Image 1 (tube, one colour):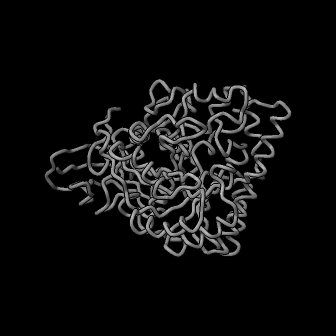
Image 2: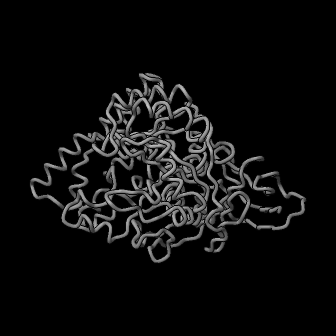
Image 3: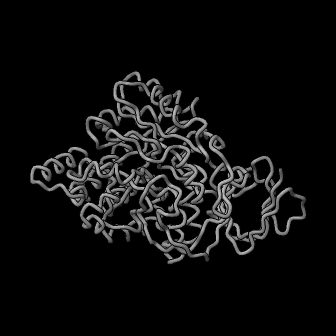
Length: 460
């Protein structure tokens, strides 16, 4: 099956030009101006942008949390991602304390295998680093193709590791060519503030935000940077939200250290004033919480300065009924926010259209950098001969409104209800097959493939 996409404007992290793209056997096999070739299917992309499929390296599908599960499973979540132009996601496996990493992988594969519509991979969250866990690291990197390992500096008693475990894990991961992802917030300080607010009878969602002040993230980001510097292990801070945390990264560059940084679409465009809307604020209860306007300015600057390399989502949706678990106690509100379908269009509308980032930077932070950092480039993350034909055909002019009534995520509200965006995903090809067209999905669960990843580099 040969597919020819004609007359599209190809945008990569480096390029911007009009050309045709010829696809065969899931790969791009030719790119050129007015290609004279035969094809089984011809798509006219005149006036449209052709961009590499988005890569969202931070999602939580079918994730157990606080006695419930995130409401998007691997089928609904990866399908919604495709509707929004994201062709590959990387989810998190959570090790149970006392159990092996392998048993956690088997548990997650039980939910993901043959259920994904789009392509996917995994990070391994290590919550119990000991001699047995240490001996599993090499196998995961070299045999399973899982090359990134997440640690939590918060959620004591469930997910949090101490600094001793962090250093040990870093040394082992570095030895075998992997990367450490970190949730960098000071868990002890947050736990103290949660207990203090609850003792004072302060139970509204606003106190979720006030229990995680900027300093909790800035301190932990600096501490993580110091440990990564000491061990020489490549480090990646997930969902960085604020000026203080990014300044910790800036300080690390003064000693010639390279840290990778991810922010999420919500932190660029939403702010903490949403928590003042009584329990309605529960829709945006996530960790870290939304921050201030000055932090948005810092994050946009960080993207253009090359200090922030990736815009992800931390997609972890819960139905409103699930959020109501915390109606009388903010600490019982399941943490998470639905955005897997909205990321690409929102960032284009708020970033490119408003002159905050260029088209090339847009592709870099939504796709290419994640592919490079996490060992999938050039298979993923670009439009080039030999790459997977993961291509988004995008209308930069079409306006539309985001709403729970029309989104495909399995959640009954939108964090962006009524938000008008300019720029629309029209057609999505996944490994050469038309997956989304005219707001219809043409691939079934099981089409998504697990992507084994290569060892990582400290440079991109």
